Amino acid sequence: MNSLYLECYSGISGDMMVAALLDLGADQSVLENVLNSLPVQGFSVKVSRVKKAGLDVCDFHVILENENHDHDMAYLHPQTSQSAHHTDDAYAMHHQETSHTSYGYGHRHDHTHEHRSLSEILSIIQKADMTDRARQIAVKIFQILGEAEAQAHGTSINEVHFHEAGAVDSIVDILSAAVCLDNLGISDVIVPVLYEGAGTIRCQHGILPVPVPATANILQTYQIPLRITDTQGEFVTPTGAAITAAIRTREQLPEHFRILRTGLGGGKRTYDRPSILRAMLIETNSVQASSLQEDTIYKLETNMDDCTGEMMGYVMDCLMQAGAKDVHYFPIYMKKNRPAYQLNIICCEADIPKLEHIVFTQTTTIGIRRQRMERSILPRSTKVLQTSFGDIRVKLCDLNGSQRIYPEYDSVVQICQQTGRSFPDVYCKLLETCRKQCT
Image 1 (tube, rainbow, N blue to C red):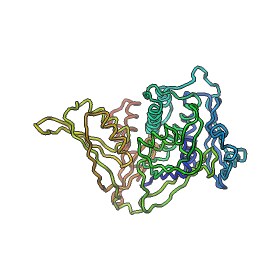
Image 2: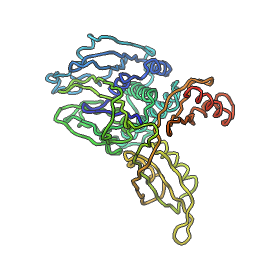
Image 3: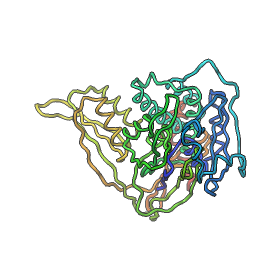
Image 4: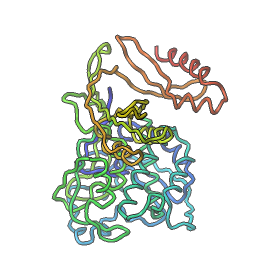
């Protein structure tokens, strides 16, 4: 099984993540098409090669017509900016790139808004021409970011508003990260720890401690390990933390693995260490196709005798959207012959805190049981195939040298909705096409 390992010794931000994934091999033309479809104006994007500590890395730069201080060291750290130019030479070398690609998406800024609500941003994402999986990733990231901002400012997620420039910057970074992850077919992401700086940083609301409240809220809610360094500065941005929380499936690297590809994404800020995010596509098992792979998962379980069927259906949807691998519930009888439901959730360890939070807030339960389980799984991968219906996503599984092929449910549903054909008809035709292409 192939996994993505993020090495965050210099933290993580949205632009660093996108740059690392592009350097890893994500199709830039696919990303360009998605960004061209956005109903947003006043920005352009530049992809280039820059030098950091002598290394050749990818740089992803969102250029805004409106002012944005996100990369302005003198603004962010007015007391330390004069001495902050150490070993990180990337931003100073933006005029010495070996190659670059620029593409713009409308250059007329709409001055009718000074802020965008989260619902407006989610509406923009829904209108983008992207795959369902990429859209789901982007929505999940923004919801995590919105919840953290709401908690920081003591308001509800529906009342959170993003400053216009910051909203556009975040929309482009988050959408781009989601598109690149989907394009690479990545579903398993390993992030052992995030490194963060210390001190304070200036933002729209004034001088704030590092990590800033929104970032700290995300790290707390999703139990992401953190290591504070002696460097004065912000390594982990709220966008970077939200991306990590949304895509991270585990924190433990396997004892043995092979590196298939490496991507280096550069940041814009200049601290006493090179601002580089290293992304590695790794093979976690180098076993024969006939061998089974071992994995560890967790089962969360609770009994409830005062929940309605509608409530159980809603919490199931919430849990699946939050990253549960599977959810099921069934009727049981408890003490005094009371009719009840037992809710079962299969998940990875990293998702336990957020999934338990959903169960506690969306149901009447007062306790959840946990069980660590070992399982055997078939080696699997995902890929995009061209069919007469268009591009579809399929899952490939190996069993004793033979290959099983499964069209992804979302792809089948999308074709049914577009053509009006029945699910069995579309599924059988896709399965026949898949077998011809993959055998």
